[in-house]
Image 1 (cartoon, rainbow, N blue to C red):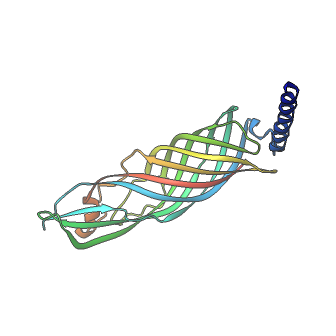
Image 2 (spheres, one colour):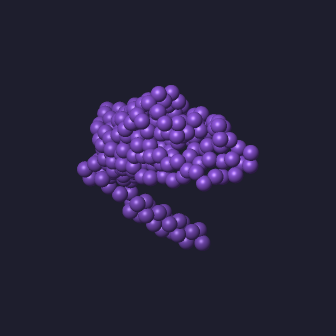
Image 3 (cartoon, rainbow, N blue to C red):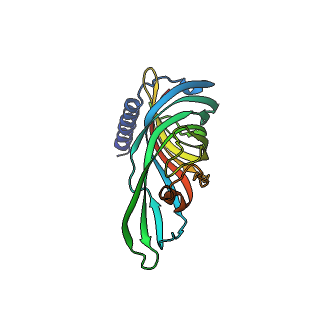
Length: 241
């Protein structure tokens, strides 16, 4: 019985060793992560959003206007990547990116006394082409064959290159905030393909409250209805490194 058990144990060990040998695939670019620095680029899509704080201001007609973003539209993102090796599991990353997109803001009015919605709506399209300059720290896991998941976090500054004066709602030209993201390095024979999802949270109030460029009182309703606006963005990119 003991000999049989030893024989079965040896067969099991040989089978496990064979399975492990089959699961260990040849690695593409085995020394790609050991470079001191490397460059790349990325393209993708994003959705812009804002957290709007309504002021609750009452007009002379006894109306209160409220602003919101009812839906989202996808935008296009493109940028470059500069990556600095810190240690086998950490990298410092600088990735200037241009985000082309817009968002539709709707202002609706309620009666101050009854709090009922009235049949008055104002729509405005806010076009924002952000030049975003993020500085992130990338934390990578151990490499499994040709895959390596990672998370990243960092800060960013953003410059709005698409703002136009004279619009009912105007945002400030400078924004800043924090971002977090997840992704996975996929090692191909000649480059790394990295799908990456990031969430950007603005910390600054980007609402331009001083509007001497607006002459008509009807155009001021959107600005008067708000007391604060902070930016949000979800970005899906495909990195080529």
